[in-house]
Image (cartoon, rainbow, N blue to C red; front, side):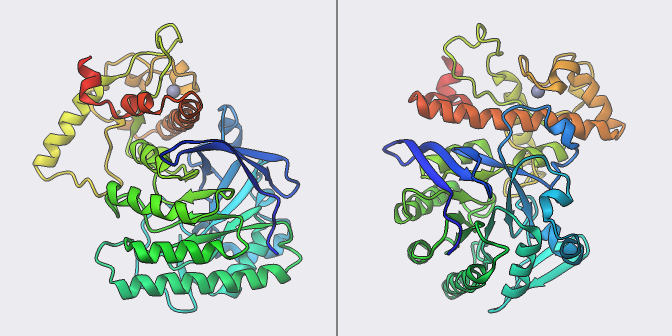
Length: 429
Ligand SMILES: [Zn+2]
């Protein structure tokens, strides 16, 4: 039997499907909890990119669950096995729950490499082919608290045939059964939880079949795969997720892989998703941008010490993005491109802007530095630019999730959506 201490306590379920609650009993001793809707802490090999553990822990409201991926770890299998004490100790992580997933959500995986018996991950040294045996040996060496089962997720491209999608669902179920078999016989994995993976591309029947069959297995939760940013249009994604979550047991968490944009997060929460991966602030940082979208729904933002929404400024950014789009310079499907939730500090308009990134933000970057300084760090290629941007973007993104839970608790999701999406009528009003 896989571990069974993880427990989802829902305090509210809204009519549309949004769920508010706490995931309890996390970690081998069950002492950790995670609020939902929430996100996991995105890392490269256990480290939040650009940040040391000390810097990271100067931030408040960090998730209690750290995500590592086998694409980072697989090539170090021998070292991990020799080390014996698991990944948390190996990488010097503070007290955290460890979740091990297959692929890095911030990078797109090449397709065409899975077979009936294997799945491939890409490390810094290239492709590593995983059989169930190798996959499970890695889990035993990593010693996570929960892990994503092996899955064939190569169906996210819109031209994937029905036959290929069906095969991916069949393979993923077969992988899950094999993983569970090894898991149940393994002493090292006692108390460790397994998340089953729901596949099915953009074909509703296959999504439903995958959800129903996975739900029959002794899994602690579900990963919704193949719905990542840029791969599928939001309306279709929402429809598929709504249908899938209806098939899943109420009392187990649903983690959506590869979706991180605030507007998409809101839509997916309303479709019944509980957990997300927090790779989005990293992508924003890598393009020299800062998250500045407003999620403040307090009745009087100024009295609450937060600036009003930076509507005009983001509109300027949006206009220049639209210009680029018309000139064919910008491909919106490319998730490395900037979104309307951020400003680009590389832009020369910030060279004499002496305001913080976000007025009223309590992060180290906003309390100590101005936009002009960040612009200077970026144009001179100073490493500190990434550090400061990552501090702010991480704080801002996790703050957004806090606001999302608050909005659900006080029935103000519509207001939050208007703030985040900055609808025209809101701007004019
Ligand atoms: Zn800040």
